[in-house]
Amino acid sequence: MEGERGASQGGDDGGRRRKKSIRCRQPDERTSTAAPEAPPVVPMEEEPAPAMGDEDEPIGPKKSELRSRLGWAVIRVIYDALPEFQIRRLEGMGFGPFLRLEDLTPDVALIQALKERWDPECHAFLFPWGHMVPTLEDVVRITGLRVDGQAVTGTTYRSYQESVERLLDLDVRGERSSLVGRMALQASMGVANACHRTGEGQAEYLARLTEDARAVLAEEEGEAAVRNLRRFLILVIGKLILGTRGDPVGCRCLPLLEDLSSVGNYAWGAALLAHLFDSLGTSSRETGVAGFFPLLQVWVYYRLPSLSRGVARRRGAVPLLQRWRFCRDERSLRRQVTLIWDSLDTIPFGHVQWTPYVGENDATQPWVERGRPYFGRDIWLHCLNTVVPLHHRLVARTLGLHQAVVEFPTRQRVWERPGRSFRGIQQVTDWTVQVREQLDD
Image (cartoon, rainbow, N blue to C red; front, side, top):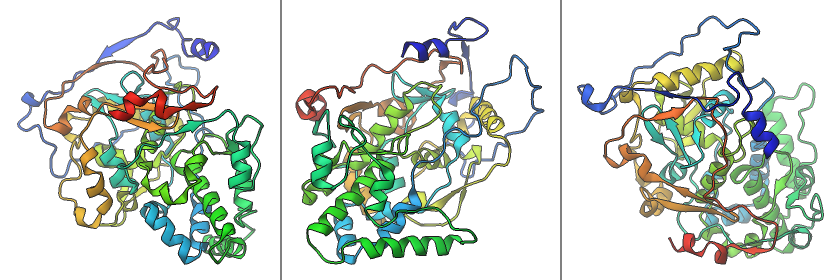
């Protein structure tokens, strides 16, 4: 921790905190405060790249940083290989819309640029025009995961060895670990080798993996089918919803999967947001973002269309992530991040889409109607030992209120771990007791 803090404070000015005032046009300085119906695209004009060794050259991520660890294709082929009765179970749990989502190419530059704008004290992005934050409405509309129901909470343990062996018939990575090897988990469901073969097209590749999985998965109900479903759920939750930066799969939520009839009662969408907020609050020197970062991409496509980072591809599809694809940018990753930073500093106030879902046909999205009582609320988000606040009222414009411009630290700001979160897992802890006040709220 200290070494990381010291490294982040290095620089020409000895680590002093530098601020700059960024003033955008106020609503009363414009003829209209509402965003135009079709906001004009503000291109990110490329300037000549600075010479190597320039002291003022912005430090961006390297080309190898922030690789996608989602494993979307593998999860999809296993889902397609499951027998019909397992598909019906997953639909009943509320995972159907989420599992039918298609892969979204990660916009590495956008995610890294957003991470630099994250304010760990209030758990929100800080822009010149004020705070913005993904909300539970964004989660449910973009992913289709439920945000209503029971909080994803329970007891965390020092060791998950017994639970993993009993419920999954697998081994953990260490005696006091909560991680399961991804390859072993995939192999238990028939996908032992997920690599492309020479000359193999994408369709042939997916068909081969699907057949491999179908040959291993139990075709009839019984103990083997229950174990297969738990393995699949831990892969979905541990690699997509609550994904880690590394290759192994987290299994802290495994005790919640012991009774499969209750899995659908949990607010997995709210847990996704809590996990993502906690990941964004890590040091800015850590360029990786754990969790379901496609949510952030599509959130930006709707809220900040002037960045032109996404392209609409499927009109009317739901959940809303289905409608978008990444607009590929051939410039270097370092250059992209720098240009996005500059664009975020200069986007006109009127080009921000504060209410992008007006006019949506909610009749085709029943998961939205179920989550509506939770929209627009300041609320605690729970994900076992991670409990973070969602300060919805910071985003005053979404509530029809005035939102002023702000002063915020530059990219060289000193990193501080947010204090209003609960992370301790050194001991066996029942979080329903430890955070009862937040649960009641």
